Each structure stands twice: as C-alpha cells, then as structure tokens.
Image 1 (cartoon, helix red, strand yellow):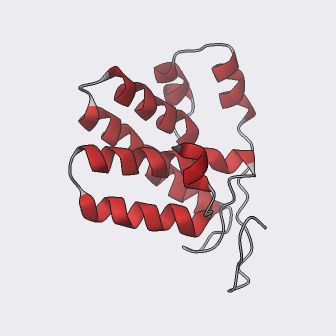
Image 2: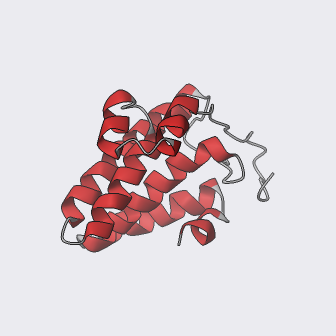
Length: 136
C-alpha cells in the first residue's frame, strides 16, 4: 500500500484505458479523444490542463475538470470504491482520476472556490498522500 490504511479499506484499482493511451501516443487531438472516450477521466483532465495552459480559459479548464471528476467518481464506484479508501498513484490507471481531482482543485483556485480547494485537497490526500507531490 502507498500509505497507512488504518481502516483496512482495500485499495481501489481502476482498469487500464489502452485505447485512450494509444490515441494519446498517436498524437490524436484531445477533443477527439474525449469525444471517442467520454468516460475517461484522464482525457478530461488533459483537456483541462490544455485549457489552463492556454491562459485566459480558467472557467473552461474548470468545467473540463469537473466532468473528469464526475467521470472519475463513476469509475471508482464501478470498481468497488464506496466513498473512502486508498486510490494509489502508483497504479497508473488511477492517475486519470487523481489528475482530474488536481485539475478541479486548480480550477477552483482560479475561480476563488476556496471551500472546494480544501475539500479536493483532503480528497487527494485521503486517496494517496503522495499524489499531490506528483501533480504539482
């Protein structure tokens, strides 16, 4: 395990997304990847990153991250997650969800949603205390 899990809740390990990864490797535009794979929190997180990096698109970046966050919650629940427990960064398929959480946190910061920033920081730390170090 990536952290001390005092409750004994098993880690949630999401399945790989080989089609999304192949499209990314091929250089497919992110909008096309999201359109083809709308349930991929990784694709939404990367689209949010792209909008944030462009500057002046904070609300758009926040919206993309919000979709990625909700798609990530759907994926976690489908994998057996019950609202708590480890979601380790070391398991690469989990990184899309964690990146969406981080992107939403970044977007919330940009639009002044301080309560959401605090909640998302807690969520990231509860998922894997090492995640933020990898994402910042």
